Image 1 (cartoon, helix red, strand yellow):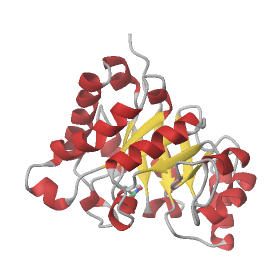
Image 2 (image 1 turned 90 degrees about the vertical axis):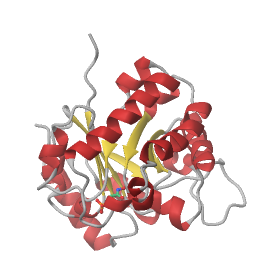
Image 3 (image 1 turned 120 degrees about the vertical axis):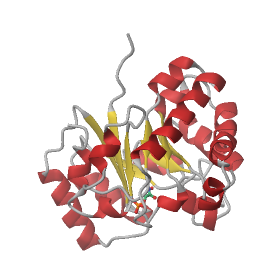
Image 4 (image 1 turned 180 degrees about the horizontal axis):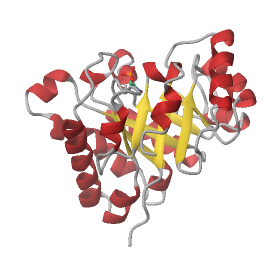
Length: 252
Ligand SMILES: O=C(COP(=O)(O)O)NO
């Protein structure tokens, strides 16, 4: 028998918010009494607001950085150390979000290096992968996903994977309102899981949560959540709204 994977919903606030809007959002989340026994919920505020959110959000909800640097401290102006997060009782970080790959030229090798470093510092990681529109249209989706997974598989031990959630976020669905169809998302998740089974281990493939991101809303999350290899969501725009609490309950 295999242990069912606990549903996981992340909220990526990206570069949005203010003290006032964040306090309102935190208040909404605290009052929602989210079903944390059935769903892992983690929100990722902008770095300047990490301490505020951690100190005011219900402790049963996780807080994540949106990015970290692969060093403990030093002359790396502008960067966030994993040690800062642990100091703030924050146990998660995103790595490899497509916006960091696109605007800040983060390579899959670099993403794997920072993912491994964060894990070695005791953090859990939401590691992001996903293809562009041209890659999908030219039939390169699986090859691209494999190329993004390879450095991760090379860097991580089997034990590391227990603290990794993979987020499949097709770039063409992020912020566009063009959500992947349940079949498109399921196919990609199924490929990722089969890739893990072959290149890491069947046990890691079975246990690793693979969550979908890209224009998820309260309206489309239900049908996506019914797909066997979709273990949750990484929500952008909708995570800034009260409807995020509906998305958390997508599989209930
Ligand atoms: O980038 C995303 C998805 O963003 P949207 O939900 O706004 O498409 N999650 O990390």
